[in-house]
Amino acid sequence: MKKALIFSFAVLCIVSAMAIPCISAVATYVPGVKAGQVITYSFTDTPASPVNVTIHVKSVSGSNVTYTKNNISTNIVYDVSHVISHSPWYFVAANLSLSDAMYVGSVLWFVTATNPAYNIAGDTWNAIRCQGSGSGVTIDGWWEKTTGILLYWQYDGVSIHQNYSILSIGTESIPMDPSFIVASLAVGIIIAVFLVNKKRRI
Image (cartoon, rainbow, N blue to C red):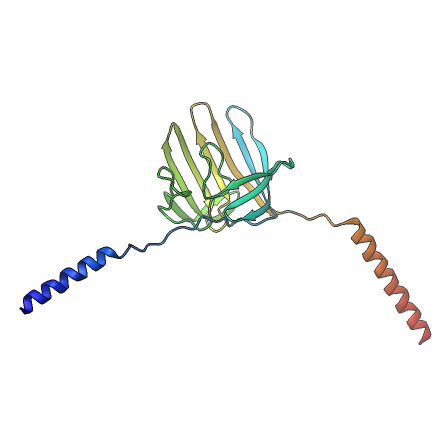
């Protein structure tokens, strides 16, 4: 009787354990890049000579990054949760870890390596890497882990051979409104005149 109870309890525990869904860490696909950041790359599209490409981050909302390229005013909306395989992935989700998919649902592209001291452009970065082949293309890319900003990109397809290497990351300088400058000067002059008159009265 005692053995039967122990056996029944053991079976119940196993069944209960199987009924509980497996809980594991799941990547959240949100950008780490911030509005106002400016990223410049050296870009080569074989056989053309290298040129500089500058990305201006305009806004970040949900999983979307809105940016412009080379100061052209057309906004480009880029979803880090569903990147496009034939485009340079200027941004991926922040804080991806080894074996995480590069975007939601990807079974082909995932983080294949991490390097806390990846060196490029004379600086050291905490970086993740995606390296692999599929659908007729080969990709080798590195991204800064906490922001998801592209550091290096090599794309080889049937007729496309691209290479991006980061040169710098900066912040957009916000031009000051001329009317604000004039108003500030006027206020400064009024205060200065008031102080001079007050000193004379004393």
